Amino acid sequence: MLQTLVLLLISSSLKHSTAHHFFDPDAINFPLRNVQHSINLDTFVTSERNITAGKCEHVSSQQPLVLNLPGLGMSSPPNPYPGFIDSSTVTCLNLASNDIFQVVPGSFERLPNLSYLDLSKNRIQLCDFFNFGNPHKSLVTLIIEENSPPIDNIDHTIGKSECFPKLRHLYLRRNSIRSLNFSLRKAFPALTHLFLSDNSLDSQTFIRDLPPTLTHLFLEHNLISSLDCKIVRDVQVLHLDGNIVRAICHSNCRETSLRLEGAHKLTELTISSNRITEIESCAFQDSRSLRVLNVAGNSLEEIKRETLERLADLRELNLDDNHLTGVPNLCKNNQLTSVSLRRNKLRTIRRESFKGLHRLKCLFLGGNQIRSIEAGSFEDLESLTDLDLSSNDLDFIPSDWLKWQWNLRTLDVRGNRFKSLEQMSLSSAPLLSTIYLQDNPVSHVSGAVVAKLSPNVVVHLRHECSAGGRDSRSECHARCNEQEVRERNETYSRWINNL
Image (cartoon, rainbow, N blue to C red; front, side, top):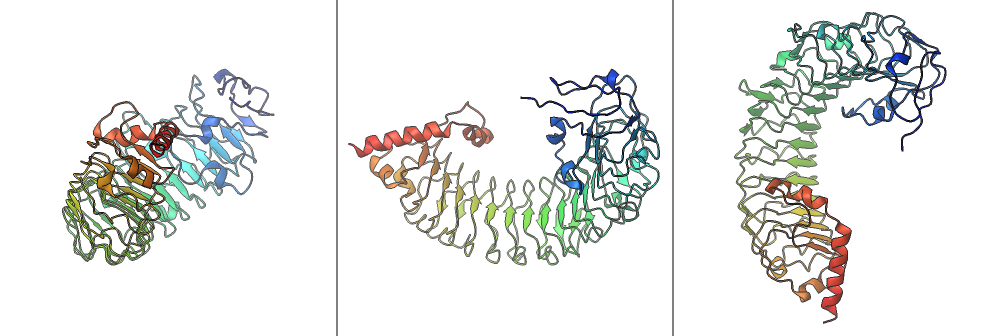
């Protein structure tokens, strides 16, 4: 049920509706003065733009006073000008989707406590993005995303910026930006999060002179072929997914590489869906603090034995959608809690593959060509809770393969060649609660085997959802009525036990 908007004393000409969350454009007159209470729609909180840092409610030390004015639909754009809103109490201002094409210098000077500003989905030219006049001393979060400047605006470079001394979060996604040709250190001396995803950045010259405060840099879905981490040496989180990098190296690098020399502070690196064919064996020599590494969706055929040995603090490793024929050497990565090797070319799981990974909770091996699992392959995985072996060629598993898996809750063996539960040796997993067995040629279910399983186990034998493609099965199954399946299995168990 829609909540009632509470609007109090926002000039005599500002009206509101208690039945719908919209404004009558003819009722809005600028300048707005004497603002005392928030105009705050539900859509402001649940924005589709995925504001991952610097949300309105988090950026101000005082209770946020919000002016949420997106999509007013006024006959002429409400282009900001000095004094167009006059209030010392407003902390958050949303002017998205208003066809604004110009922001006059000094437009926000009468909002001295403004800490959050959203100018997304307007028509502002790139050269005017940061042309607010005098330094804005209180602004913490600035969002200028998905702008559609005039068609004659062919220069996609931002060449200048005023100073924003307290700005920490800057969102510039989906603006067709090719480069930021000015000193970010001087313009944003306190910047911590910079979002440049989904632009047209095409070389490492797109950015220079970063402030030492920058910890999070998001560069997904651009045209970047190389990046030297000397430029971003203080960054802790680096996202480069969806670019065209071909190798990860330390110092002996070719032109199309991510160079990690000097990346001592890096804790999270995601570089999925690039064109990576090689990771230099000493690539992570300076990145020993790395906890999350995602290289999914590339063209790796091999990872040299010593490549990951330096990452003693690694927690999450994702190598999905490569061409690996063997599990990489993980013997020194004993802090790992999640390993994903989906959709590679693995054929055999060997006894030493996961040796020493006592803290591993999630292991995803679906979509390979696995035909055999050697005895004792999982004996060190006593913390394992989720195991995915779906879409392989398994028809038999050694009898003691789950002997040490006292914490295993979920087992996914869909799309294999099991004909019965006996071939899976499941009685050694007392906490196993969910088994996905769809798309196996199961011809019968033995009551004796069911009786040995956990009394609350749910066995999924076929799809209960609408049909879908091979890649959509997990999503389809997740939408099933699990309670209904559980009740059916419990009824079946009681019937078996009464025979």
